[in-house]
Image 1 (tube, one colour):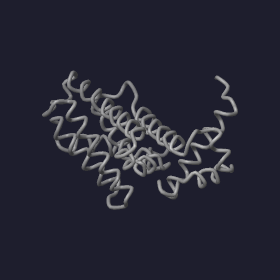
Image 2 (cartoon, rainbow, N blue to C red):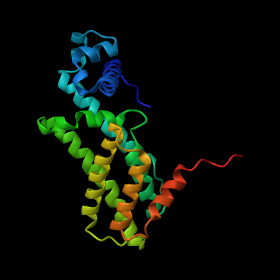
Image 3 (cartoon, rainbow, N blue to C red):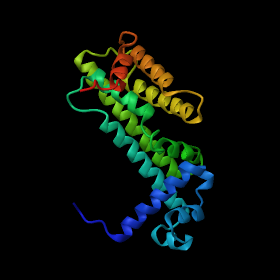
Length: 214
């Protein structure tokens, strides 16, 4: 394993501090002074490792984006059928990041993409990566005969990501529960891919069922 130098370690600590403050106090609360205090540093010392407050925030959002994608990858394995993979990604996509504030951080900074080109690039890359995950599964399921897409697969992938994004925001805001969101996502994907109603929900339920006692 490559050794990480002290400066890089310090940069990671500052990014983690920025994530912690943003999750706790929101984007507005994640000031340079607040991030420095969380990291146990003076504000001017933080700027030795990053050129600006905006650079710190971009690094924190990028790290959160990468972690969300890691969680999607961790949810599947090669021997899964396309239907099982789709159920796993839907489940992970609507709940990944809720246990460690990754999704909350991303949503805190989502409005910043409207006026910040750097934030927009990060968000666009994340959306594109999420779409690719869905598109690969849909293509595999179509080839195997598991799916009969009613729309172009790229449009289905984009629709699922957009729906997922909006519903996760509802969960974070407390206006919807994860079970309700999973039901909506599973039902939508069933309909768009020509699966019998309830197919994906059965796979999702099986994933969340407790293991039998030994």
